[in-house]
Length: 166
Image (cartoon, rainbow, N blue to C red; front, side, top):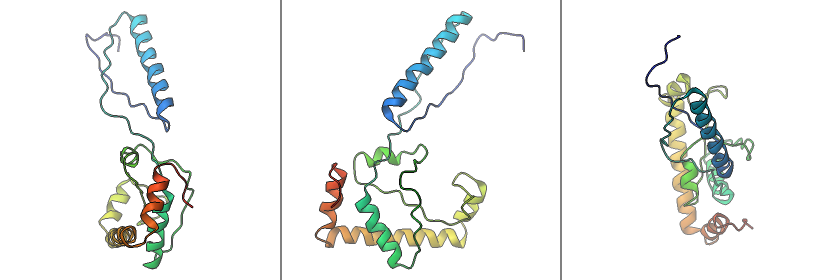
């Protein structure tokens, strides 16, 4: 408690939904660390631990194909807010390079979220198995749609490149 150690280490994770804001925020956090080190007569060494998670870039035309296929399999789709931001995920990095969707199928009560033990139990349950198979079928059907529907792939590609879907 009143002993000053020779060495201390800490790990901090800085998150933001926008990369420009994240960059600015990181600069300010580093400035705080440097000011604290200067005020206490210490040295500070900052080592980035990993890569940034880029924001998720939705492609609504692709999501609509997937949703249509889920519905054709008898699944009732509750879209939820489309502007709701997700937590940090590397799917954002993928979505900057190729058209990407990140659909989620409900396999547990809504109050159970992905990082809870109850969700892990739901994932290995019959509901989890059903959800996985349903999602796999809908993804396969969506891939077929992109191959056989003349307008599907151009629409997805156009939206991904920054031109809204017609």
